[in-house]
Image 1 (tube, rainbow, N blue to C red):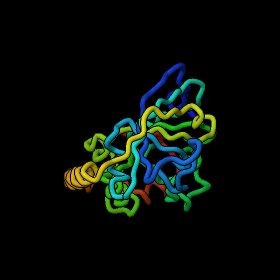
Image 2 (image 1 turned 135 degrees about the horizontal axis):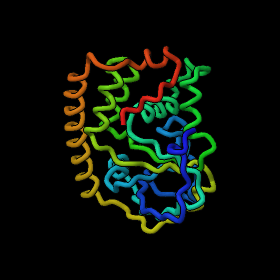
Image 3 (image 1 turned 60 degrees about the vertical axis):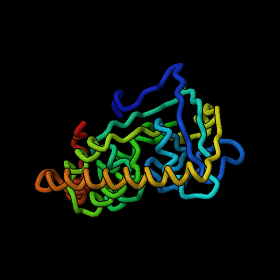
Length: 227
């Protein structure tokens, strides 16, 4: 792995946010679902609104403000681009058909033996576009330009117990019904605008770039990231 893709953050503390459907019970641990963007871990975001939109449809959600000490942790910072999209594909099981290829091995190594990973959020607006890419409906150039236009926030994912122990809860807030109703409306409005914007971009690039199956069939990582 290139040094630019792996780094150790020294003496750096960041404020992040985590949304829980009903509140955190016990110690913070890397126990999300397996098929998440960057694998099984504890997910946090830089934008307070993002986790809120994910939990606003549940009856007793809680939003947490966290202080995270990054010192002494091995952390790859995955830039926006094709490599990011393929990492999401890998963790969602979309690359299993090329398990023995060099492109698969390259992507698998990005988060291997790491304590935490930083990358852009595949939010509800991006889910639609990503699925279209994975299903062969749009090219990599259409996807990457959509990513750039949607201005996604970043997520920090604690993958190990070591990383989780460096996370402290600063504040926990229960959301009122009025808060939830407002968030639901804002979430749907942003989702609709984002999808419309992405649709326009995808039409613009429908004849340029490569499709997901073509990238996997090639089997080789060529270093393209479109960053």
